Image (cartoon, rainbow, N blue to C red):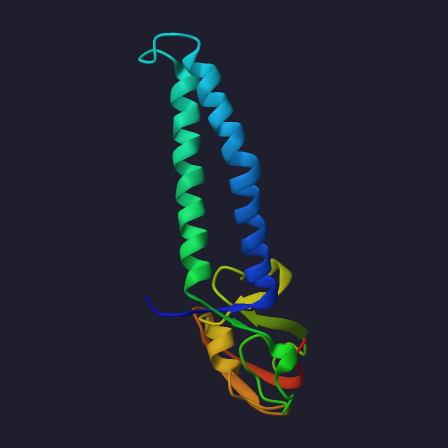
Amino acid sequence: MTQIPMTLRGAEKLREELQHLKSVLRPQIIAAIAEAREHGDLKENAEYHAAREQQGFCEGRIQEIESKLSHAQIIDVTKIANKGIVIFGATVTVLNTHSEEKKIYQIVGDDEANFKKDLISVNSPIARGLIAKKISDVAVIHTPGGEVEYEILDVKYC
């Protein structure tokens, strides 16, 4: 499997989720299964089947997170000299040249992306169009709704 780019903050959030799943949720599910077993016949025991299903989801998520973390290429942009070039992890202030609307995006890994919080995936059309551009460059982004031009106003590595 190839390495997955991830910010320091994204890796930390995954580690926290993994810790919660292993130390809180997993023991709760095990206790629920044990309690449901005490009710007798497992064939018609809805509580038992629900707990087993929840256990499957929990174990699947644990495996998924462990795999992502083992293949993560954690990038700490604060240790990179700021040369004004848009890179993975950078926070970019852009101006839509048509609507004059300013936006601030941070380019993050796929798992960290949240468009409502202006965290865009490195694989998104916007990020792909901005990567390797410099301050004052104009990036033409090809979106499903047509082309959008963004002028890069600022690049921060934080």
